[in-house]
Each structure stands twice: as C-alpha cells, then as structure tokens.
Length: 274
Ligand code: NAD
Image (tube, rainbow, N blue to C red; front, top):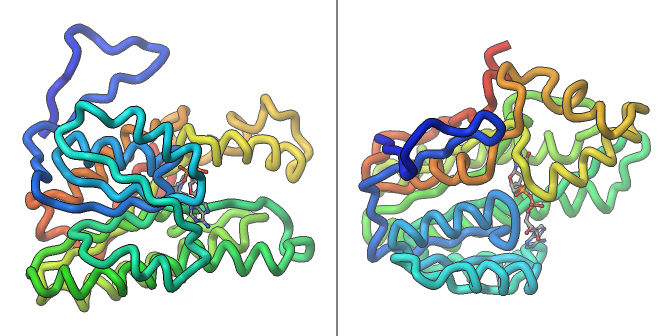
C-alpha cells in the first residue's frame, strides 16, 4: 500500500513518513473542518494532493490563507471558507454537496471538573459533537443521492479512554464515536461509510498549548510533561506527526476503503493495547 518517496534509510531523529500511492480522489469534493492548523491542514493538503477539491473550513482566516498559499501545484485544489462552527446552521449549509466530510475541528481545556467553566464545556460539545452532527446532516442528502460518501471523524484515544481533567473533550469524543457508528448504520445501504480515527498525541499547536496546561494541572515542569504525562501510556515514545494521520484519513476516504465502516482506527503507538 505504501512506497518510500525518498531513497535511503529514514533519519533516526525524525521518522520517515512514506506516502500512500495510487489513491485517486479526482472528481471528488471534500470538506475538512479545522483545516487552518495541525491535523486538518495536513488532511486538506493530502486530499488535495490526491486530486480532491477541498473546502477548507476554519474560523482562522489567517491560517486558511497560509494553507491556500501552500496548495498551488497539487492535483486538486484548496478552497478556503472562513466559518465559525458554533454557527450550526451555517455549518450544515456548508456541507451540502460534499462527497467526503472530515470532521476535525476541535479545542481543548485541561481543568478539574469542579473548576471547568460551563460555557467552555458547552462550546467544546458544540464544536466537537453538535457541529459534526449538523455537517453530516448537511452532507448526507447529496451522498445518498449519488450512492457514495465518506465520513471520517477525527476522534482521539480520548474517544476510547478517559483522562483526568479533560471532561468536555472526553465527553465530546465519546459522543462522536456514537455519532459515527450511527451514521455508519444509516449510511450503509446508501454507499456511505463513517469511521473514526483515533490518534494519540500529535505534534500540533493544540498539543503544544496543552503542555503548558498539563504542567500546571499536574504540578510538573513543562519539560517533564511529554515523557511523564503525554507519552506515559504510549508504547512508542514519540508524538505522531499530522502527516501520518492524514495518510490514514486519505485511505479511509478512498474507494478502496468501501467496507471499512462503523469502526475506529487507533493511531496511538500502542496506547490502547494496555
Ligand atoms: P489545532 O488546534 O492545531 O487545530 C484545530 C483547528 O480547529 C484550528 O485551526 C482551529 O481554528 C479550528 N477550530 C477550533 N474551533 C473552531 C470553530 N469554532 N470553528 C471553526 N474552526 C475551529 O488542533 P489539532 O491538534 O490539529 O486537532 C485537530 C483534531 O484532532 C481535533 O478534533 C482534536 O481533538 C483531534 N486530536 C488531536 C490530537 C493531538 O494530539 N493534537 C490527538 C487526538 C485527536
């Protein structure tokens, strides 16, 4: 399924990320939320490189501009769309006509439940659970009409496991798992698949911000957070790169993945093997 894109052995310091070859999304329109940064950006670029026209949705206009600036020369195209997903009606409308939907946008706050601000809990659930529901709802009529569609929900190890101090995030991701399975059951007779992807800690701005928060929550020095907190349960002791997640997402969006539905793909370095 994969082939090296550069000759020679991978450098020891930074892992080599071979690209999946032969997957063609030409003629497909994909919508990726949270496309201005981290995993969403990597997914948008990878799907466009495979030939898709990518509607890149984010509230971060500057990040979308930077993404668009990096997209010329790809087989497909990136079309930036500034949108705050807490506007649920606009989110649902934005998904109309998409062949592929990648629900990725997310946010995190690390705080004990008794100190967790209720308004932030509400926002996390809105962006990470209710918006995906509305986006799926907006995308399904077109997918059903053409008897083909792909929904990939970027969940997390925290869709499968809980961690202290992440009540909203864990609740939203567990909810997303249920939404994804339900969409899989309803979509199956219409050629629509729905899956979750469950990364461990990915090298993105969200994690970089979390290192500071976790240091405060666990009363440890920031430099100890990676080894002692974030990678404690990962058998492979490194962060996963956004591009590695994007390769899995690309495969799940491809025609080749037509029988993979209602399931969750952990990309967690062995975390959930415990
Ligand atoms: P990130 O912070 O780098 O990117 C998230 C993007 O979502 C940002 O561009 C942000 O602007 C956008 N966004 C947030 N709220 C929004 C809103 N209301 N409307 C529109 N856009 C909004 O984060 P990331 O690490 O790339 O995370 C992406 C997804 O992957 C999230 O769902 C996250 O839960 C999941 N995830 C991340 C990790 C990790 O370690 N980074 C691990 C597992 C799962």
